[in-house]
Length: 111
Image 1: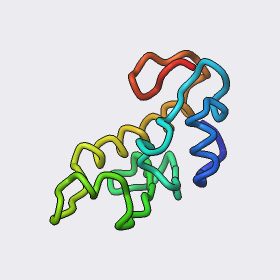
Image 2 (image 1 turned 60 degrees about the vertical axis):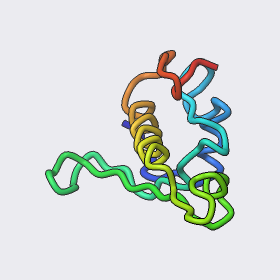
Image 3 (image 1 turned 90 degrees about the horizontal axis):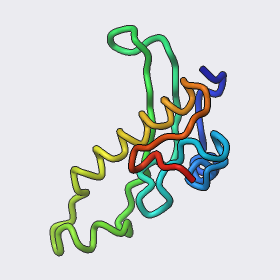
Image 4 (image 1 turned 90 degrees about the vertical axis):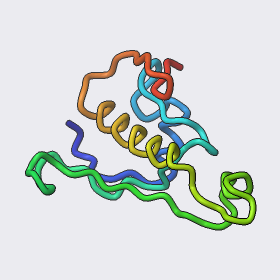
């Protein structure tokens, strides 16, 4: 796996443009569907069960697009977007762990 253990917002945006893993390989969704602002920690060891640890963050602000529609007057982040954030983080991990190759998952699309 790569020696890089963290990624900032610009690096994640580069991944959404297909620049992180190279042409034809894994890409994250572009904003507004990118649910990660940074990946702070990727390690193959550690964590509660000693199997590794991933830590990422999304800056939650009142102006995020989904608060206006979910739900008006009682804003809540949709649970499916939290799940999508986890899939995106796992996608980065898979992109780092494997040799570059084309992906076919909906959110890890070919460019």
